[in-house]
Length: 426
Image (tube, rainbow, N blue to C red):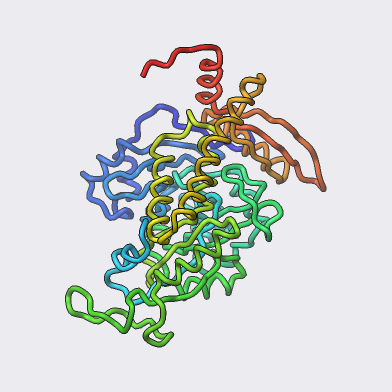
């Protein structure tokens, strides 16, 4: 097998065996709580290495947390969102004087860690394997392989073996979330966080950015560090003083003001949005552009029976709140409504016409990598129960360039049934 990343074999987890490995202590849990968590662990294998992952949030444990060969790899925490900048930023950072504002990129989230096998102390020259984990905790064989030629993380892990490198895989030749970026021809990695692999504790923003710069690891853009409050330093709820930002003078525009300006510029370029972070890295808040919302809606409504209503509704709500906070005129609001309506209707219309012509719809992706990496990816996707149809398969400069479609069964079937006259009972 090219990949060996197999799904669960049906056997329930053995809590006693996992307790003997000390996973509960590494997770900061008692034995009783860990036994309850173990009921929800899913078993996988990657190239003969068994591991367990938490596919959803359970008992305060982050989704995507992995237990592998005596090592814990923490999941990445959920990042809350604000719909109104003016009130949401102070509410999201009540005990912080300033926030760092970094770009939010449109790709797929990965965590990268070095895993040393059981009983391997590194004395034999084997420092372990650098593995890439998806948001849900699966080891992605494709990302693990292509990262080797995108960025050299070995010096970083030599210096900091307990690091968890958190980043985004972006670019048009992307097997999960394709998006055009002017400076990315195929696929690229951008780091946006650095956490302790076991505890999940983050580095402060400045220290994190300095370390990545030291190891030549590309990072997401830092727009700046801005005051949360309108002026001066205000006390926390317990009367203590907030942290000293250590730079700009008082009376500058607030973070909410600056983020709005940044969002307007990003929106013009069709970019995703921003993530605001407290300077210690522990608190985060995100906000997205209208272009991102409209793009998401167009994509979702091109596959209307495969994306849930909550996915679509949340993005419509974001647009409504942004229109009000931006204090748009009636004309501007109508223009926004036109863009939304076009994204929704034209996308669905194109899908219906495609199915009516006897063709299939789905999520199309192009990837470029070594033949072995592409084989591993396709096997990995099919192993998750996805129906993959390869539409083109070529070789360029030693790489295999494959365009494939993840067929979305529900949209294909329901659209065809309605075209054939199936009655809708409402």
